[in-house]
Image (tube, rainbow, N blue to C red):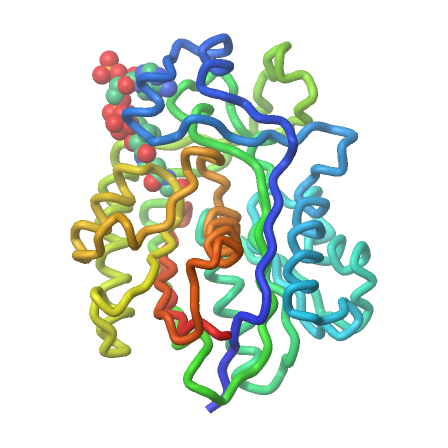
Length: 330
Ligand code: UT7
């Protein structure tokens, strides 16, 4: 049976750091509240004119993943970007990445699945590999949430950040690779996290941000409770499907929305926190980009070895959620 294997990872974040202290000058909040309630200490914010739009970040992350995989962009046959903040409504961010990489043979398109965009994109590309429709696919999670953040809403603006991560998938018939991706959606709860047609007023000290004509709205508390249940249930189902126990997991890489959500899910799954990768402290919630950025960092830190079981688990607007079990490739 053919399945996709992760042959290379890459990630990038914008240069500008926005700390909790900086946010104290923008909304009525405190470093203490943000740290205690979310685990976030700082996040990265894209600046206009710095090649830090969604497709720029996606391209930079992709080049690193391609280099690690030893694959040239011209050999790619598929580029899938999970994002809710493409540079423009259309064309897709994926087509802009294709142009920047000169990946002329690749079919390129975006997937919109809220913060679950990367796992949904991975599912599509992995299936294309399994059916022989793709042999070298680039899967990206990239966001510029600063462009849709409501900078007057303290309950959301402290959470979000910008960044991108990418993986290169190639086929394998060995024991390694993406064992499966379980996905679920429930549109009945769309109004817990959604965009509305009103541009945010950008504060003066953030005047390098390029805003879009819409912003993000969230009912955090209800979403929190849904997240813990959905994440734990789908992760447990994915593990059970493969007869993998939580003690077999080398590393869980969860969507980084809130450290309290991550800890609650790890506890429910009986996975100790030293087997859970977190970087929410440094980047906040970068939506589709959290998992591929964390995966790349864990990979480059040497935390993953051939044969390790890695659990990716995500949750986001839609609602959408999912889990992937990966047998790490050498
Ligand atoms: O990535 C997609 C999925 N996203 C999520 O799953 C996010 C899920 N939600 C969360 O992470 C949390 O619900 C939040 C971090 C958004 C909020 O934490 P919470 O513990 O649920 O707080 P809360 O909304 O219940 O608010 C508690 C209090 C309120 O004040 P009162 O009414 O008790 O006086 C808020 O007004 O905290 C207040 N508050 C703040 N205070 C200082 C809300 N935001 C802030 C803030 N600084 N930034």
